[in-house]
Image (cartoon, rainbow, N blue to C red; front, side, top):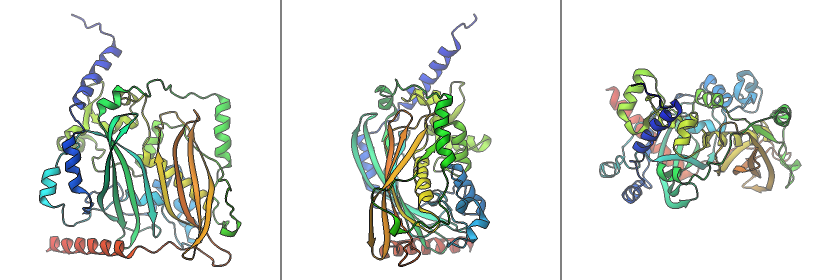
Amino acid sequence: MADDTPDALKVDERLEKEFEKALEYRLTDDDIELARLRLGIDTPNRSRELFSEATPDAIRNWAMGVGDDNPLYIDEDYGRGTRWGSQIGHGTMIGHIKSPMLGDPMPADVKARTKGIFRGVHVFVSGGTWQWYRPLYPGDRLFSFKGDESQEVKESEFAGRSLIRVRRDVVMNQRAEVLGVYRILTVSTERKKARSTGKYAAIEPASYTDDDYERIDAVYAQEAPRGADARYWEDVNIGDELDPMVKGPLTVTEMIAFHAGGYGFTPYGLRASRLGYKNRQRIKAFYIKNEQGVYDVAQRLHWDSEWAKAIGNPMAYDYGVLRQAWFYHHVADWAGDDACIIALEDSIRKFNYMGDVQFLSGKVKDKRIEDGHHVVELELHMVNQRDTETAFGSATVSLPSRETGLPVFPAVPVDLQRTAAAMYARHIELAREARR
């Protein structure tokens, strides 16, 4: 007998079955309590990202992947004429270059008791903080160690009960010099709860007229990095506004560019063919069939709107990390080549869906002299075409001064540098043992 069921209905049924399988993974009280055992334990990051060394090409590709054309990042020759004497990396890149670091594992009893917790639970980045202590130079090979700092159970309007976790990543180069600290705030939710609320079901895909694009393009046409034109601390006033910036409209192409720039290959990984098969055997919960019955990564909700709809969103959406990079881009364009961006904090409040455009704004909130640094505090905002604020943040920038000259990055806290040095010494020790 011929099957005359409408194709669309068959697609919905297939996705429904896969979604029901995904519901088997729950955010349980036992997992939440077991996760507390990991708090305060630093372990080496054994992952290898797409880029393990900051080559000139890697630095350029990351910047271009987030839509930043600052020649300080993308032009090797330009950097030689700046105070840095070299091309340097976009600040957010340090969180996403990884060489495998050797070291002592998590205590065996903690590892055994916490193995497999939160498996299959939906996780997304909700914000983070960055602290920088030196720039990223070509030739830097980056290592990191990580550890959960805190966790808190909350009620979310989107997903019911959720678990808020903060993980600290300390990043160093091959000389054990700490480049920065990246704290990542993630929200873990059950897919069932995220879907059942239907909170965002009424959001319609964005559409644009020629007039809409004139508004967007007018901002793009005015954007430019400040570059070598130094922005002196003495010339900045509280209340000064940053030049506007725009990002989007968001497309699948932009997601491809971000991944090509180096994001998102660990801990689960995007793998092809045989490597994809091996990865699927390693982490089965990460692979869920699509409407054709083909296994694909759960991560595809960032480019596959049908899967995003199945788990509670009206369409695919971006990564929180991408918007962190956009905030950094906005600040760096304003600050100029000579500045030191020493901290950035952001909160991702709403989804940035396919087709959405983000308008970035900011202003000077404070200025002060602190421990010899001529510092300004910036307030940052990101608003979409629906006039909804999707993210906000703040940045701390050390600017040149007419009295003291070029700024410098703050010193690494002594305890942090000691911990990093000890972790790296253990890495070298184990690497030597492995070569014997």
